[in-house]
Length: 376
Image 1: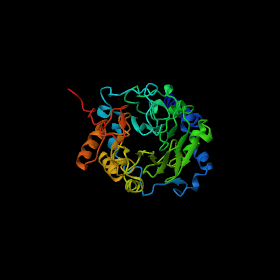
Image 2: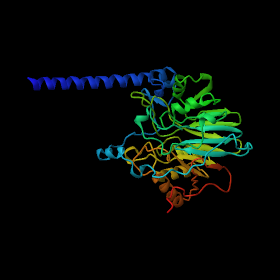
Image 3: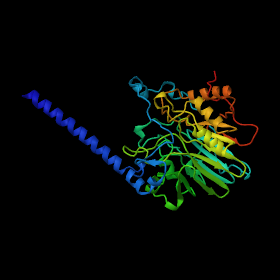
Image 4: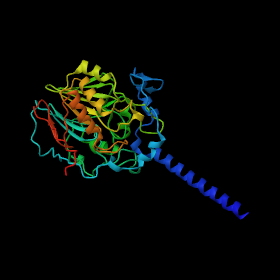
């Protein structure tokens, strides 16, 4: 009888724990602003009118599986670091925009801020691309891997006005709630793919400050043309909003230079199509990291990054989407090692700046140092 009572009490305790965890999770999902707008709110914004929205979701231009297979043997690797995280602090060049002399409108300067974040100074304007400068790319600090280093090259609190923030899609490592909150009163305008506007509105950003575009649509920012282009990826921030918002790449065309920003994308024929329609590009920022054969359709291998740069007819390629977070199973420096080797084989000009190191476009000199190589 006593044993039965103990078993009964154990079940009661387990049930109470499971019920409590479930309740806490539901409250977190419903009340945390980091998740942004719900799928219902996004649909109410009219995204279903897009030709890229079919069967209730956005779709890629070519058949794309998010997971091409899952290997249970790889599961323990997600919880280990090893060389997936650098053992030393990475070199970084701090940026103080207030102390920098004003650039002539004819000069375009691009600065990689780590992962996929970048600052473009073009035609007298400052544009921020996917400004994820937070500590953890997840809705809660306990749910993701921390940034490799505690510091970032630019302090968002010290920034003056940003003319435009450009977002490629709504994943946490690209659309960061904390970074947007610091930028929302400093930013003149936000440019996002379809559906992402609903997230920004849920974060109390004024609707007149947000423009959302479908693939191949163009908007002018004074002398600059911004055009959204296809990418091969997916979207979602919650448990039931997969592909409720669009993902895209961006073409940024100034009066004297042209830049391509891939966002996240698997390799596909869209790169060649973009290159034929809008190339050549003075610089292409192309994703190169967080890859694995298990999700090879939505992220590129480094060799494909270099091939994509050639397809785009880019004079210079900057590998991004690496150097800040552990979001895959490869070594932290594997992306740049493989891309560097592939660029030599494919005769593609690759620039390898340290985080925070500027690139001046149309210059005969660009960053080429192999800074990731450990010095003895």
